Image (cartoon, rainbow, N blue to C red; front, side, top):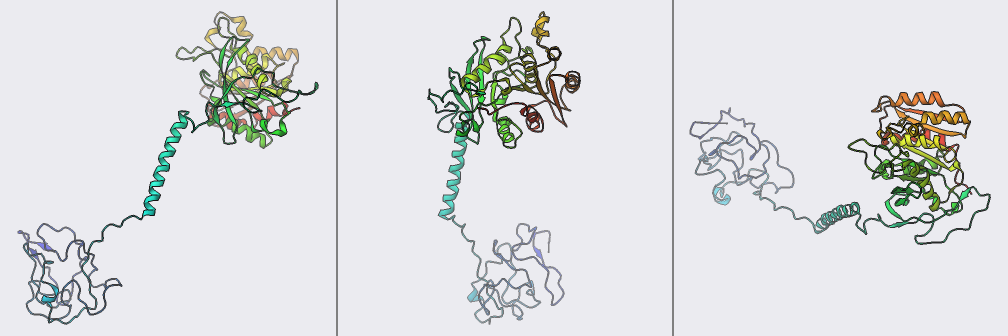
Length: 479
């Protein structure tokens, strides 16, 4: 199609007896203002030369109020021919003032014209928008309400607002809350130790999917004089009636960095607790009770002041806190193993150093440690002017002394990533292992391919050797 300069339509050249290949009515593109239109906008039309879809009126009715195709007529408009090369009766070319679809009624225009087309297409009317069913509305409303309720419950749980959380509720391990009684005393030759009391007040910090709890208490250390938080967790077996007369092994888990005011092992996102349960079910691990104390008396930033888990002169006695007060808390509140065969440490980075040092310094109290990405020597700036005390807390010197004394035996499981941030960590650990693995010191080393200096690297790799290495030499549950 084309238009002249004043916007009037110019009919295309068309050989006699042929019809143009045009798009369906209502689908032509690029029309300018004033261009004639063939049908009211919005009507669905079939392409020229194609039969309309089935389901329309029967044969003999007219399409869209126009005469049948194929009959020569008088008074054809300037278009000259209908779509099949024949005249259309009574048709006038549309103009700006008279759009094509404004034609005389169908009956007046074709009173004498016999029906020629086999189908009638009734005028198209837009259907009103379908109304949603009541059921669908109720479903949408219900889903919306549930979504909002879930968001609200999650927020209330995060901010520890009852009843959407059990955080802050009292937790009593091994007996109903508030129960002051206890089981009968074990035999004199028993390997287990009943809780010695006084019972600490534990509040729930988080609940695992198996129903176990990570609980927290404030410990006022009698021997260290330091007061800080300790989180504890006991595996589900601890509350199993089958183990009611059994003592469980304890692992003191130390974090890296400041380790204050939180011990990151208490968070269930690292899956230390659930991993221990899984490893126990697989026969790789003992069902350890975890004690997770703060490592330092305060944050070590911004001045990088840290305490090496040691009793540094003039500073809070964090060594005594970790090796005396925290174990005492566990003995007072849990069924434990009497001997050192049920006591171990684990830690990463600074916590790995403190774990290594604790076992080497007090082998009569602790039998094993898992040390992940540890420092090997003390390096706190607070040691300045205290060389003697610093040497007493140096794992290299402690290892040499233990070898010279010929025991007791200790088991040290190291794991280090080959992509640690401190590039000296792996060679330092390798040197320690090659130098001091002799006599009473037994070691294993797992180098983690691609492993970095973080807890997310260390936890899953504990299940690939280190936890099994120490579990083989430890005891529990015992009666």
